[in-house]
Image (cartoon, rainbow, N blue to C red; front, side):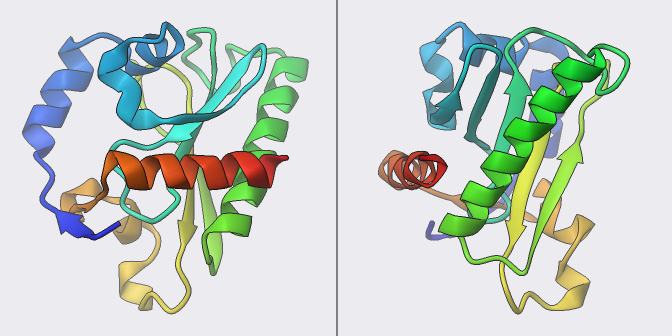
Length: 163
């Protein structure tokens, strides 16, 4: 990953509010979403690289089924299964990317990015406190520039860490 590039927030909002569900497109194998590099898949879940990563090793974990609410749309068993995948992926990210702390968040809303997904993002060591937490996660502060080759290398390292 070579550096940060500006992020067009207005274009992003338009795309996620008016475009197709990006996670359903990934599940369907839409080639427009090859950038996301799926590195984990089981019968019910996926994990893939975040297209608009703000930290090295930023990934998303989701159920394959289009569910929208993190607790109401999953029964306890499905919720615990998903959280088990989130934990395994987070441990793989920590094994591959140096981290002081790993952030886990479920973001999105019915207004955009409605498909339930968890963000897993490793905060690199020695990031100044004022650039941690929400600041580190906000695409408005720029996103990491990375090539498809760099994405494939990271995805392969995560696959190996997952065993």
